Length: 242
Ligand SMILES: [Zn+2]
Image (cartoon, rainbow, N blue to C red; front, top):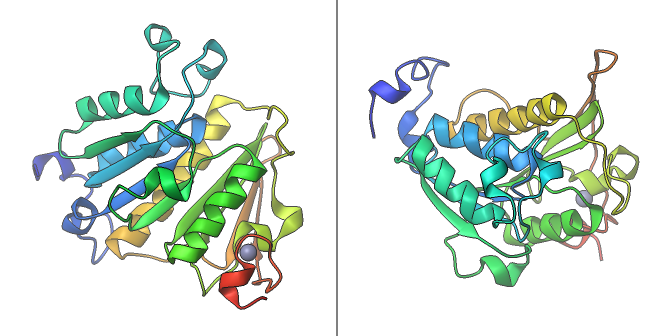
């Protein structure tokens, strides 16, 4: 671990410990727009291990926002390409590609992560991921985008509300194609990465129990307190529902 690499961040907050980032494992599910920027910033910050889960291949319509990929990557598997690029960014970070759709089975052979990043773009897969996090008791940082709007939240199983406890708060529209502009996607992914760094290094306050909403077209930012729903279809069984 090179101290010089992290010289500008070791004094970023009282109590910040680079070693804690180095000793952490983060599972990033979805290496698209959110996942590219989140993984780049976490690798650059010195997170020790990143598990990159995505079944998809790089297509030309990804390149407006998925900053790890270039035209020479078209048709290649995102998880493998991302792991290779991130290794070049920071050899301190172990990058493990998981080139399959997320499921409990697809990640079972890998070490248990300290944190999960929900970088998905559809409700169905997101619900499966959050149910998994709830069952496993693994904290999760959620983000979703729609055009210039976005939201993020930090979910602690058995303690705070998950995104599906707040039905009206989810921006995804089923499995329809979501409008995505790069600067907005990368902004929300950076907020996810900030939540991850705070949680893993033990500084500051995460937005657990809150949902942050952004409309960057109109410069609107809102923070709502969110309550656990015992009947939540994603986390309800774990949080005390039937
Ligand atoms: Zn819930």
